[in-house]
Length: 307
Ligand code: FAD
Image (cartoon, rainbow, N blue to C red; front, side, top):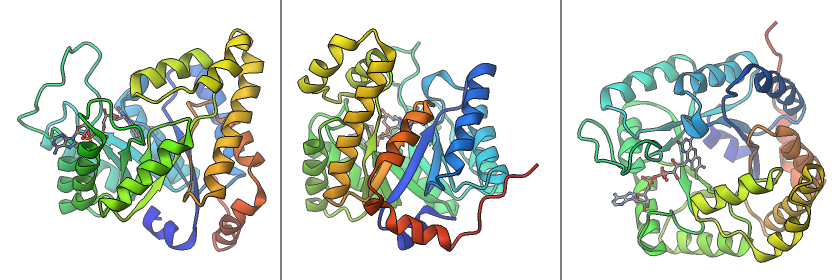
């Protein structure tokens, strides 16, 4: 099902993002977590592409498994960095033939071993170009990335939002945000997006912190402000993983509850493959937020995994 169709039935969506596991043991743990997730009937799941060192082929394999074998509504992430138009066209046909209906189309980041992101004469330099190309030739529902604290390379928030409008005008039907920890940034951003005339859902992306040092590093890389109040909570416990996970869950629950109470259109959980933290967070959210989802569940046949 297209995510745009799900929006017609659900005021709020709850989605979970994964990346392809890199080794045997993490794949086993991942499978167990995916089984737990099935019980929650998320609105959709999404699989990252080429991020965190995973191979792009693994993304397609996992998307195929989630969509065709496990019966989830699945969104495949796809980036155009270093890809030729020919490769992109080929990959789109592969995803289309697999039955995938939803894509998160992104530019991607420069490869680690290259000093600068060089212009691509045979491909695209921005997500908006990729979105336009795919929209003109294929029938996917397309999502794009959005940055409540602006994209790290953008000269200003105003310029970044102008560029965001180009992405939506090119065919993006919804936006999912980069992680943020202070909801003030999200609401200010949503206001600016509306003022720019962008009319689509801006789904907040939330990370339940399970690994303090890793998230602090991610925050620095993406330009997300790590609040002083978080530092104060985590620092005394930074070498105690269980305590960190407990605090991470409490903070994410406060953040998600506040977003939903103020009418955010759902939550996109960045699981970092530590799915149990996201599942606990989802389960801890008040039932009030989930009513729409329950109604929707009734209209769907249950997921029946293939043998
Ligand atoms: P763009 O929208 O192209 O923007 C990149 C920069 O260029 C911005 O500063 C923007 O202001 C500027 N810009 C855009 N258009 C123009 C224009 N026409 N002229 C001048 N400047 C312009 N990365 C992965 O590798 N794999 C993933 O699976 C993945 N999933 C993600 C999911 C989400 C929800 C998000 C928010 C990010 C994800 N990323 C992923 C990270 C993403 O690839 C990086 O943030 C990347 O640096 C930017 O991608 P983008 O699609 O937002 O780029």
